[in-house]
Length: 286
Ligand SMILES: C[S@@+](CC[C@H](N)C(=O)[O-])C[C@H]1O[C@@H](n2cnc3c(N)ncnc32)[C@H](O)[C@@H]1O
Image (cartoon, rainbow, N blue to C red; front, side, top):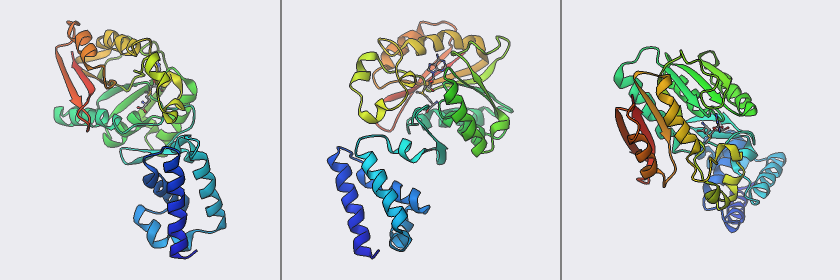
């Protein structure tokens, strides 16, 4: 394939995706080519024309045609990126979102700034394992307990832990929030990216998000059922001075502030904003 044909292939694919309502068409086409050619972003343009053979071109068209139906690209490719690392994903787990990287960064900074040795960390609602694996990779002394109510989710998370060679420091368990955690066990940090969408908002979500398992998104009429249980039970599982850190929805800051401030067991409360200046992570200290 010559350079002109190569650029035509790219622009035709971008147009198809754009027509289907996908704003990130150009980036997604690049991701598809990077994955199929197994090269970095710039190498697509340098080496793409000579690397593309008939088999790859056929696969490329198949992927673009599937994506036009608004099925998430990460499920089509079977992988997603989080905190600079590759993670396997399938329909049993939610596709990780970049906002959750803020939660990981806060936890990592907290451990480093407090000088915690061998920190014990609990991740509730592990999904594909992005939080637990990131923490274990970034903090080589950390011990992580990772729980989820969904057994198939734990299978995917275990594979990701093995892929990043941290499975020996992550204890995976099936659990409904804290139900499988021993009351004697106390953690330095409890982390969660909970389901926080209300039944009403769920109906209006774009097709890509609706492809995620519903249990990973929805939590009661206001989207607050899981968060209320988390705030209520976490103090029993935190060491003195420990932190509960969790993600919230774009419109939940006021309600979650009220619930947290009404609980006298928490001695500190703070909110962190995402890149769009939306309150995104709550940090509570006991
Ligand atoms: C928003 S997803 C987060 C997944 C992953 N931690 C991430 O950030 O991409 C929420 C996760 O919580 C799990 N979950 C839902 N209800 C739960 C419960 N009662 N106890 C434990 N996990 C639960 C879901 O199965 C899902 O994997």
